[in-house]
Length: 220
Image (cartoon, rainbow, N blue to C red; front, side, top):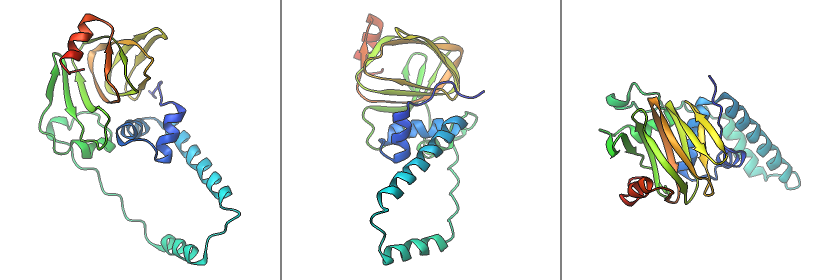
């Protein structure tokens, strides 16, 4: 089954151009591992970017020294890609994208975030607030809340139902949820539980007493 929810075009284009911060780029790269359609779209964006760049320099041909340097690089063998580091044994059976492996190689255990929710914080440089791997027990409810910034959540295993004013949606493995500052929603984890990786900028904005308690504790 292919993913049904994808990154917005502006987010995919920014990732392709190398403009995204590391935390959001990590989420998009993880989705690309799981989504053939978005890999094709990324390739089209890269081709378009190359054509635009080529057009921009048509009137200013490269110097002879620059051309020689490029030609020498083309003759050099391409170094083999280093294999991703192995995951710790307690994570080895989970469907974690290879782009995340280097962030998890030295992790020893899950941390308890809230009852029913475990977290591994990812050591992402420049993360604006939180970038984590989260594991939810079956049936966990995240009460209605808003966002102080963009929030990305990528489902790796299991799934969740998302209820908002814009309608009800279901997120399954490979699906990327993108919540903008104006979005309010409530999330209920499916009966098989859920594994997600997420990045959030800004703080959550509570819309209920239960959400307020979690946010007050600094845990949501």
